[in-house]
Length: 308
Image (cartoon, rainbow, N blue to C red; front, side, top):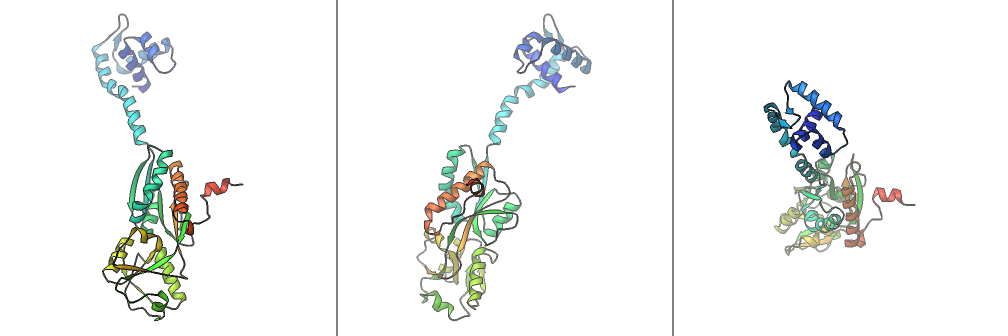
């Protein structure tokens, strides 16, 4: 049976006749057209569905109406549910420190522009979040980034943050230069995966200084790096910004002067949706305000393209 014919029949049965239905159908259609299509529906059904004058559904008409009524009457509710489900969603990736201590302030501003925005958070290190972005599993991440953009990803530099070396509070070392003067460091090195920009930058600068210090412990988060150093299991490398959020009395931080800073960036894939763009813009504003001494001059691509 033709679905459009069924829709017209629904209105005829609900409102008690063709002329009454024409006044209630939410789009323009003339009474003769409805009458003609009801005739075709009865041919398709192989049964008379209603008496015209006075109007009355036949048993077959009542059976058909009972079948289609829930569908057509629930369309309005379904539309509301679909609209609710289609609220913009932002899937955000990054380290626990970023998601816990920085993203809430950013999202407070984003929600002023997108009040219905839904947020889901995904904790991971650089390699993980980049993989999630490529797979379409998240929309945006804040992570360290190399000098070259990751393949198939776009990034906006947020801040260039110096690195620090974490040592146990009881360690006798007070100066990184004195430590590295030994050229071959026996203390275990604790860091995030070797593929992250933090560890790549650090090892590249060690090589330039002709210092050998292989990584002994690989941790999936800066929190674990701090914990292992505090436990006396080795020395660790992190960016200086995390120290304000990872206070530990059993750890000291030695500046890594002369080492390449780490670039923190907003990273995404493809053309960002409006709410993702808003998040990127707010990340840039937040970063510039929070870390003015380390801020980058770069603008979001769409803002740079629009500049005179």
